[in-house]
Length: 171
Image 1: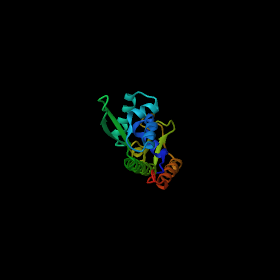
Image 2: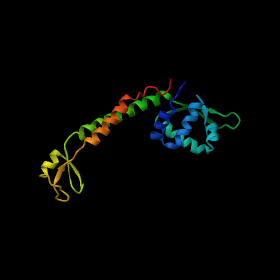
Image 3: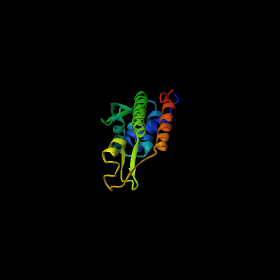
Image 4: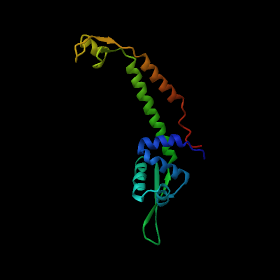
């Protein structure tokens, strides 16, 4: 199975913290039912630190566990599996959220905006008109701003997101 560790790593870091990325890769490489003690050994961390990270991943349903009782010691050992289907779903939904947010921001930026020479604040046309095109903070004159650079950047970000396929994290 060909897995895009970069996309999964970005997702895991965003949702559960950067310290969980290496752990998630170890679980994926181990395929299914990877012992928490093996993970602790490979990461050279205490079992409680590993469990804390696993619980953060589990909070987003990125991992699932199965427990078995150790016949010699009587302890429960948890075996963990990474949920690639959930990861793919989360990547897709986060991407859709980001696209929606950028579209909303683009719509707002395409409106006329005004600001004073001291850059106290930035107002849309209606608010600028309500204040008679004077800054409510410093009383300076409000001038129309050129948003073309910001609009271009937002459109570029949107274009990149819309072109990037998110379906392929595992083949």
